[in-house]
Image (cartoon, rainbow, N blue to C red; front, side, top):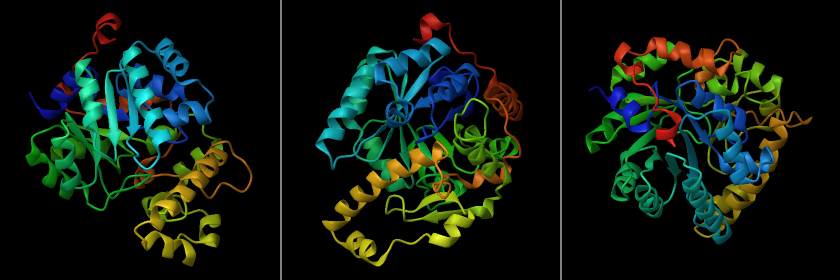
Length: 339
């Protein structure tokens, strides 16, 4: 059995695709549509509740009412805030109650998530950008990796897809490629390279089910890979965004005070907290089309392969046709067994 078929069986999906969790773009209808099409939709809890207005458990139940296929949950293991840690644990426990089948963790030590998940037959994948992070996650018991390369949106990695796979594959767990796949052709290339599957983010923003404003979707359609730049002004860590005229005016580098604070062992945490609070507000406003916030349109270099806004079903079908025949042959179980 090849890696793609193994992944489909492991996650109980039809095609080895994941709809990446996105703040603020992961509205519940988009998550459900990805799963309903035979891929795996991932819930971003802050997006579900803060942006789209759902109490977390009710939001999960709403998504489940739209599709009986498996869904996943993104858990960012931030340790600087005790309040956020407690909330993350509550999200995980609620997801267990609601039959979520996959956790995608990022940052921090995933051990407590793995311990909880494996008690309930839940699979855990961890976001990584290099083998050092992957080894730590493996020590924490994860079942696989989502390899975030230098073409990804959000907090992109620094390695090419091939270099990252070469580092991580020897660890012996399934590796999912994240970054740069806006077209079925690039998806096929990543599978041929040896990846078990792919995680799409930007491609699903430019879909009819995503509730991002039309201007944002059209900006993705019009953008080339070279139009994606990294800015320090959202979180203090480089984030991939579309290089709009507004971005060209305000620049992408942090100011002198912020840069000084980001260099300090203690002050960098304060500065990143300030940036994080600002970015939550800015990204929410950008997603809702508020005037003056168009400069904060996140996207990866996969935008260069996105040429039209399509339904999620169309997108997944096109990628399914690009996959090797046996990689798209696994069928999700019946609703009763997948939940």
